[in-house]
Image (cartoon, rainbow, N blue to C red):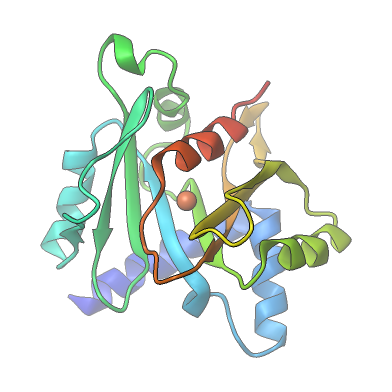
Length: 199
Ligand SMILES: [Fe+2]
């Protein structure tokens, strides 16, 4: 069982790295200093048309829905977080069905790329500003501003999305966590989602 989880993460992360320049640059730098990328992955995000259906495979592998987080509801989309100790958390999201989901950017993305790949992975850093400074030297660009004020429990930023055939694809997330906070703040996650809308 652990082997199939291992192969899921290594295959999907490798595919993601092959197609995301920012993440590849960060991964190479972490390898160079002997740290490696994997220990620093906070969560991996899957966009889907159907969270319950997509999560089934992970539940079968021993992941559990994080009941303390419950269902994270946003304007036009919702998400659940699945955890298994020792593995990155999986954040799985979808648009609301019907009118409420109309403005969501998720369905079109899933039509284009499916739900077997990662939309993003989030890498924990000590200070987002420092990580951004180093990545900017390597020409990595960021989408919008850091969400979350300095000193708060959770701060996040996305890189500019990869663009495939004129359409936005994956991003890299940098994440700062403090005070033992392991959740995802609703207004904040929505701001991040919107930062990847192709204007
Ligand atoms: Fe994220």
